[in-house]
Figure 1 (cartoon, helix red, strand yellow):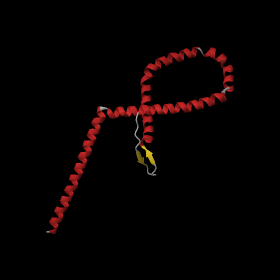
Figure 2 (cartoon, one colour):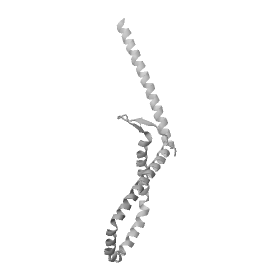
Figure 3 (cartoon, helix red, strand yellow):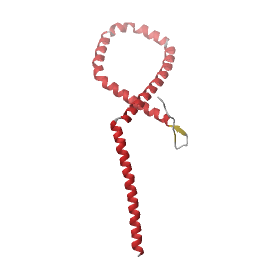
Figure 4 (cartoon, rainbow, N blue to C red):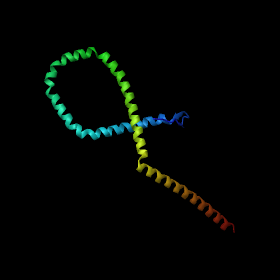
Length: 155
């Protein structure tokens, strides 16, 4: 994935690279795309999860006997566990952010290349061109009207 770094000026006159602005936008698109993908799998996942939870509920009495010992060992190892989890979570968050940004960039590129988008861009350019032409015609007509009025008054 080759990126070109173009700059834009913010109001504070600090140069901002457009890739620095795009990455958060791509990440948000990627996160939304991942969320939609997960939501689409919910109906299939629902039945499986209900069965899994039912199986776990039946195992609760046997697990409850072991809870005091598990809590004791968990409390003793808590400082080490929390430290490693924080370190791990920072790395995972960075990886997730980068994967969302990459996913979003691919999704945006796909949208840009879609026939519907290309048609919309073409129509927008045509409309903008027609608007500029109409503006020029209006200015010329107003100028000609002004000259005609000036000539008529001057006679």
